[in-house]
Image 1 (cartoon, rainbow over the protein chains, first blue to last red):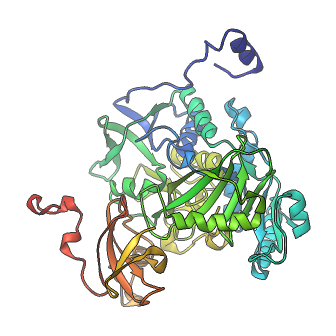
Image 2: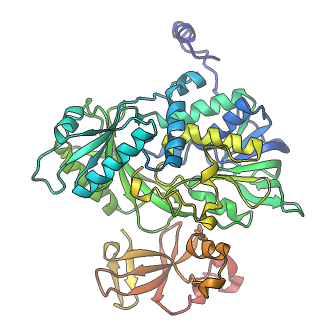
Image 3: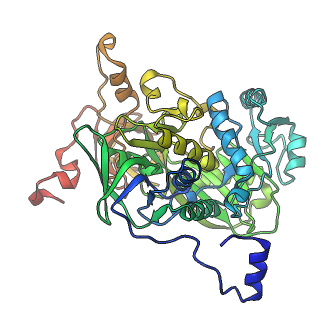
Amino acid sequence: MKFSLFSLLHQGLTGNQGWQPQWRDPAPKPAYDVIIVGAGGHGLATAYYLAKEHGIRNIAVLEKGWLGGGNTGRNTTIIRSNYLWEESEALYEHSVKLWETLSHELNYNVMYSPRGVMMLAHSVHDVQVTKRHIHANRLAGIDNEWLTPEQAREFCPILNISRDIRYPILGAALQRRGGVARHDAVAWGYARGADRLGVDIIQNCEVTAIRRDASGRVTCVETTRGPIAARKIGVVAAGHTSVVMGMAGLRMPLESFPLQALVSEPVKPIMPCVVMSNTIHAYMSQSDKGELVIGAGTDQYTSYSQTGGLHISQHTLDAICELFPMTRRLRMLRNWGGIVDVTPDRSPIIGRTPVPGLFVNCGWGTGGFKATPGSGHVFAATIARDEPHPIAAPFTLERFTTGRLIDEAAAAAVAH
Amino acid sequence: MLLIRCPWCGMDRPEIEFRHAGAAHITRPGPPDRVSDEEWAAFLYLRDNPKGRVAERWRHVHGCGRFFNAVRDTVTDVFVVTYRAGEPRPPESAPPETLPPETRP
């Protein structure tokens, strides 16, 4: 069923009794051309673009839990492309351009809202680094502009620009095309789109082993719902990538950390944009429901527990209360953690692996949501053609051996 | 917040006194001119990142200041054992499934 004004009116006038499930719940077939491990945003986007642009329809997306139940449903939904290095700029800008037309492309409202992402500078060093980013972005054709503290407050009126706070605001970088989208809708929209193109989305199906033939090539996966043969396997398992790749005998340059976020009780609109402060580890935006969505930093130790220390959230709330004094009496409704896979250079890994037929898309660390469409798009091309998409080409696994790292650590600090 | 037993101080102390320092028992390859790019990559970047028991380094930065090792379960975040730097990983801290059945905890 295509969503349109007509279908909405028709359903409204007939008691909303005619809505159908948006995707099937198929049993796994014995074999597929491509198996994607992980039905989060990136995995579903990969399947969608494989089916849509590369004509491969015999695809399964295997998910150990439920669709979009991992980091896709746990992140703070920020979208931006103001990265420092050319490789990253190309990748994230590719994604932002796809975001701009994604609702139309999927015929599904992902609620992309380019409301502006403002990143604060609190010290002379911050000012220098921020301006360097702005110049680099503008050279690459990406919008980014410098704001004085007064201009920053004009853009976000609840911002505290007093000079006598612990970390006073000396200015800000603003990417106006940055913003937010509805995270669940992204997963659902891609799932619906992929399903309509014949992709089987198989939930509650955990991969337990990867089988290979004598030449080392992948042949099938063992799952909790039985063995499934595949010519190619794409692993898009976020925090669990090391576990899945271990089944093929590969060690990865990844460590998994808890990353926390929290939301407040819903209030009337007070926050017209996204504000981030990498220096004091806080970022905030307001959802359409009215909740303030707040992101904290990672815990210091590796973990798969999907929870973190309360002192990490408290540290972030200290910063939020100083930057936005009017939030001091707000109550927090929920606090949760997701497990993020972090690479040594804080850039993702997209591409082939030493195992023939096995591909990986991982290492998005603390900031993968913004890249969902672009990541799926270039990874699908990489799987289909068996060679890296030009935008994905620098993000290989081999860069950790050759030394050609894409060191975005300073660019993004804890919060992407 | 985790409670961590410093094997030098002999006390359970809150996590904010400690700094996590990555995986333990990683041996630097050498001599440097005979180490291949692949070996350097493995030493510098590749990690087991296990879901289960991990041996890791900690430093008691706001206490005695000394490094020590710990075995922790990354699913529950429970510490199995902490021991001083330079000591081998205690055999009883191995993943339960690798131990003979009669000795499993």
